[in-house]
Amino acid sequence: MTRKAKILRYNDSGDIALCIDVENWKVILEFLTRSDQHKKKFQYIVKHIFNRLKNRDIYDKEEISDKAKGVTAMKFFKGRSNDRIYCREMTLGDKTFVVIAAELLEKKKNKKINQKQRNLIEKVGSYEYEIIE
Image (cartoon, rainbow, N blue to C red; front, side, top):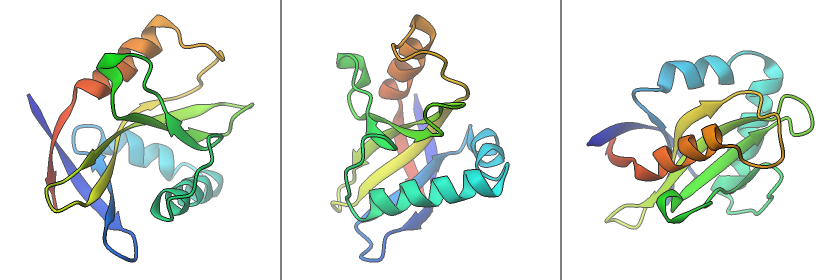
C-alpha cells in the first residue's frame, strides 16, 4: 500500500526535500512544536541534512535488517528523553533526495533496539511513498 508524504521544504539548491508522512503529520508536528527547544533541535537537524553534514549523534541510519533499508532517525535529546523520528530516505526520478519524517518514538529508554522498536523501524522500511506538494 502506498502512503502519501507532503513536502515541507527544500534546501536552497532544491535537490533535497524534507517531507512528512500525511497519516502521522499531526503527531509529529505536535511533537516538533511542543517547545522552543524541540523547534531549535529540529531546525538544527534539518540544517545538517540539507547541507549533507554527517553527525551520527543527531541523524543516522537505522538499517538494522534487510527490511529496514533506507530508514534513518532524527535523534532528539540523547541522554535525556532520547526521542526519535524515524525517517524513510528516497531518491525521486528527477534525482531529488527526499527525507520523509514517518514515525515518532518518544522516550527511547535503552541503547539497544528492543522488539517493539525493531518492528517500528522495519515498518518504516516497508513504506512506499507518493510525494505530494
